[in-house]
Amino acid sequence: MTLRIPFSTLAMTAAIVVLAAGCSTQSRTSSQAAAPAPATQAAPAPAAPPAPPVPEGMSYDELTGVLGNGNEKRVRQELVGKTVALNLAKAKGRGPAGHYEVDDTDAIYFRCRTAAPGFAGGEISTKVSGYRFVTKAKQKIVDLERCAPPEPVRTAAAPAAAPAPAAAPAPQPAAPARSSGGVAKAGMDAQGNVVDSSKVEAGSGRTVKGLNDYEGEITGNPAPNSKFSKLQIGMPARQVTDLAGPPTDQGAYITGKAWIPFYFGADRHRFEMTYKGQGRLIFAGGGMGDFSSGHLIWIIHNANEAGYR
Image 1 (cartoon, rainbow, N blue to C red):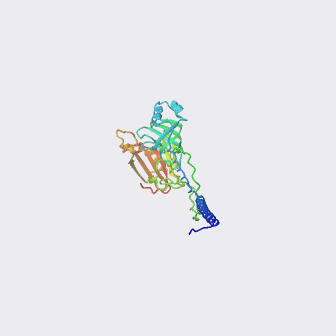
Image 2 (spheres, rainbow, N blue to C red):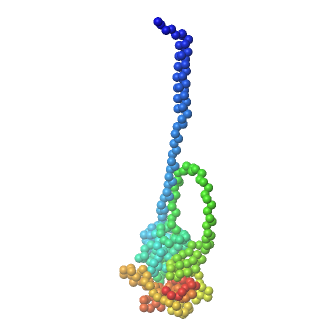
């Protein structure tokens, strides 16, 4: 017996199958289209570090070649206004107070007209502002416009991505107010008064020119009615004691020049006098057995001086 199915039933069944297949395909297509592609974000390029400073100007060897001409006027014409690149260190031994040197075996010294705060030596690049030759001490003094480390060369950094907004910082307690007197140097307070004479360093005061072209330094502020007000850099020791009276204590000490082989100069040792309530006086050039032949090169005012070394 043959089973007969009506044509209308077959057509309806086929239509339902086609419709179901179409809905399934459309659902998968819509699901795939709705899924967004993963976003990628490039990491910001790191900022380039500043280039190291490169001092520019005449080298020390070139400078000494010009100084070797000997003619002070010609040397001044060739140097003033020129830029020099030097590695300075504080002058030792017989070097004038407050000056710098590059080679401690020669007699070439440098004076800074101005200096960066806290400058104590190192690489500099600056202009020469003056020159003089001290005949008695046979010293060549070169004046420099400004002593400061060279500024680093900065390069443009790649722009960084904007950071997410940070949370507001918690309120911090106010910082204590600082003294308006500036940064205190060794053995001194921020107002420039000497508080410990034994810790004061050369170059912390002002450089002065005294008798017979002697150059020296005066550090600190004088005590009221100070006996030191009558003194001048370059005075011999005997004249100093005639004006200021005998010291509370005195003594000698060896300088770095004493350890230089075959050095027979006069500044292998120095002589120090201390005055209670006044300060200290430093002499150079005298003999170990005759300090009276030395000359005053450094006056240290200290109203709190105890008087003993």
